[in-house]
Length: 217
Image (tube, rainbow, N blue to C red; front, top):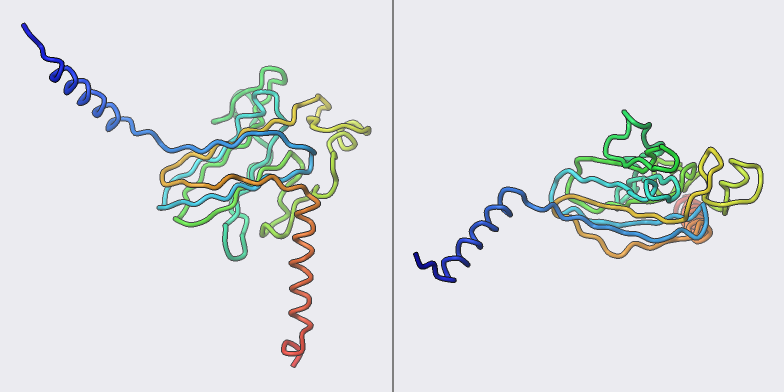
């Protein structure tokens, strides 16, 4: 029996198309790097083109990184806080989608899974105990401006990127965003000082508006 290369190519193409149709690949965005201090805040803006389920998670704690916190805000208007994972999970039963760190035995990566409307959103990555104050992004974070706070907080001496039990972690992070119709520009790491300046400027503008003549009449 003679089989032409054209027929082989057609059969292979149909086979691969069938696989792709049966198991579509969900788009994913990944952002990795290192924090320079415990109180750093990484903001990741993203756009969801259509309503759908979005999974936002880190996979860095399981590889030796610091304990992360993810806070999700609306990207426009009041930038309200709409989701936050601050405590991770407890191994083995409460890990869910989180990996277990072999060194500590903990599964403290952050994991958020939410059904969202189409629109613009802002995801913030911080280190554990640097929690969003809420109800909006401009209300700041609990440890901003405190520099390397984990050493004094957990051991009573200088240090950075320490776990609550005093063990040393690395400054590495890796954040994944998964879902259909996702797009995002490159995220920007902001120091707590720069964000504090931004918050102060917004507050000053609001006070000036309240005290302006047209608002007092």
